[in-house]
Length: 478
Image 1 (tube, rainbow, N blue to C red):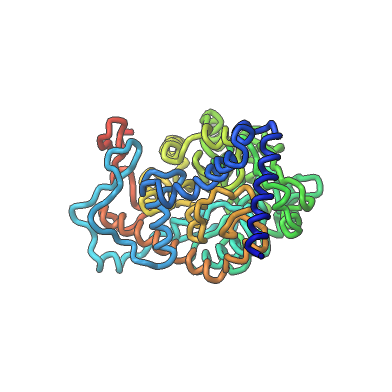
Image 2 (image 1 turned 60 degrees about the vertical axis):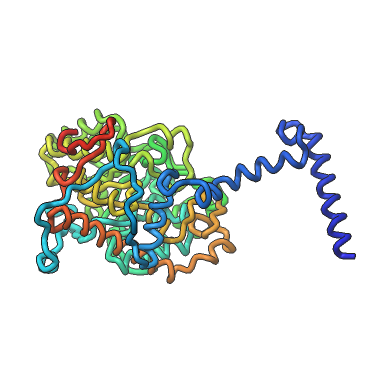
């Protein structure tokens, strides 16, 4: 009897769908092929998942291929990351960077006796300069774009690994303080977390943040790789009570940041803003942008010289045009800005030509989720490297490409309590820390094989790039 009712129910559902499909006018496939035509849209949706498991080769998928994700998964779980029977990486892909091994690399004993290099930000210019041993840290991901358990896991994992966590433009929530990790507070164009009732910078809120010993530096975001020229986008369904309180905005309404800081109209305004933040907080203060046109940067460096070297930002974070974890217009994500592989050498050279390279530290941020990418960025001139999506993979991301829809199946980018339930912060914190340690260890392995004692000593002479003809070309020549 139950079986018969189920069959009748199924037939009734099919009949209902048939009537709906044949009478609707918005989709030709469903109108011409009622019911069956619906399978097209189902397979189109499921294709994202089937491709990465059944059809894509190990190194052909975008934005991240299986080989990249597999290494991160093993590193995060503390599993053996060695391979057998040879590399599957093509050796003639234009733009790829490889490394040059030394004839006499340092011995294990020499490495063990070596004191690891430190990088100090704002030394001599900020009241409280910040010194870090880590060359690999967590890039900007806002609370709002990421869920509560995800932020907690990142905070605890960062503390365990001795790396810093960038808050992203969404302000500093209690979850960032789940553990006493070092924090870089990002000031976005909407000034979330440090804004007054009119949306302007609140020096009082800024001062209070500066007194927080966990906050080590401040980063003024001018633009980001996913959407240069456009501000952050957080759909209203993600703006919960605590997110609204943290950001200082209404609950349930779309959080749309301005496309730039309204009060920063030129280089002088930017330098004034940097001085205000650094003077109010006493902490090193830098800027973040994705490089496109360079005239404004030339003007900024010129104004620094005219005003004095103390007016310079303490660091520049270069975001890659292929970055982005949240919602962004495809026209911007696909087509605007330079990648870090192009922009880091440009900015490094401009800073050297201006005599400011020792004054301004250079941080690269982008798709550098594996040891080779991080080591390559250091060779190109970066002092340190940040990644966001690498740590998302460490949290359990499966590249479902639903970061902007509040339906993330792993609980990382959703505020649906049922989906968040699968993400245990304690467990994922261990994976975050393990991933950071493993990557650091392997970058050091590359550096030692190249004949230098420390990854900070990597330079263009230690690598080559594959040119348009598929042949090796020195980084020093281009």
